[in-house]
Length: 191
Image 1 (cartoon, rainbow, N blue to C red):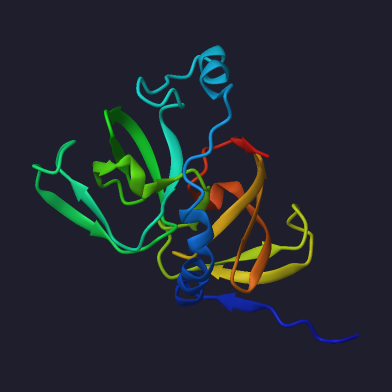
Image 2: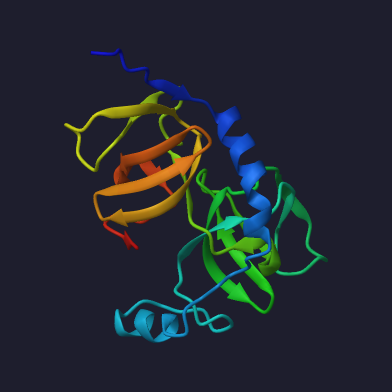
């Protein structure tokens, strides 16, 4: 029986992966099914008046440099600059071409809608600094571990069933408990 190597995936490798594959997603924009507004309204969820998309909702940043502003215009002061393409961000409000967003630290502000992508990503347990969590071959804790992901690693979400999410990045692909991710809501299902 061959020994199985389980690699710990670092934030640096995660960033490199996002940079390498991010260009394809930059061109993709915010593709939205035509029925999104109707489905959100039927579920009793609030929708944005501008986009017709659910509020709140998770998206990700398209670029490595995104200005977070105090208010919805370029006249407002920049309070933060995000330097991490693929970073999951939560849209909480809309005003014209501006979106009010919140990051995993709770920082809020406004960004242009053009810097956002509908691509779903998640951060591994940003609230648990310095830890690593198992990524499994199947959506079950008794499945074979395939990697250990450090806090702060970003992965692309492929699917979630409400308990487990399939995610991938450079050097990793597998399943992680949904409760360990920031970028997906509790019990949310993604196909």
